[in-house]
Length: 276
Image 1 (tube, rainbow, N blue to C red):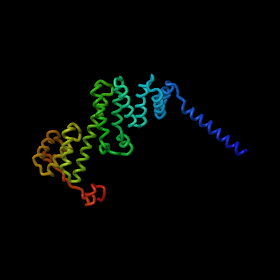
Image 2: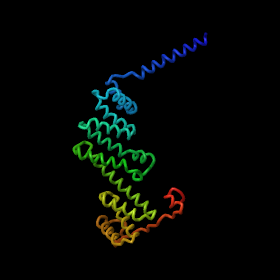
Image 3: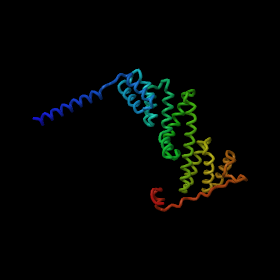
């Protein structure tokens, strides 16, 4: 009997505990409580807690009095929490639900800012990774968002910063093309390298990478025995960058020796995945 009594007591305790847990999990707080808790959390720098309260606010009161502000705060909380993909997603959602909002410029700016820093910020700050070595997809998305911001809201408070970030993105994309050009040169793929360098000259003429691109264009034209095209590139380099180190004191172009990598046959046939 004592054994049976203990079983009943344990079972009753489990049932009561489950009921209490269900009641606690199912409790829905007033709309204002979620919002105030989220604001307190953000003011104290606890963005995890802020995000939790904002998510609950959106879940239980999607059309409440704080809905629009909660969506904006969620963008910020996720961004500060380094959840950059989540911040971009929250900004997307805000713009879909509130296309005519007076805060649409902010959401558009934050969407671009999230892409601008996605991978690049953490990789550069903590891992020492050159951002121009990375996939430019998010950078292009950031450029598009900032461009849209300047087009739709030229007088926005966020427009000046967006403009500067567009310049930075342009420079990153130009340098990425040069990374690819150098890679192709090491592989003796001079035509592919030339195409990448020419793309920089034609599409990013104001970037700091233009001088190096013109030098690579000239050198690859020379490697391809395209003397006339090489001469045109030299003239363009002389006009735009007369102080370039590629010229000697008599303004003669000093091309570098495009020495290919000494690669084994295995390295060649496996596209660099194996061998030396």
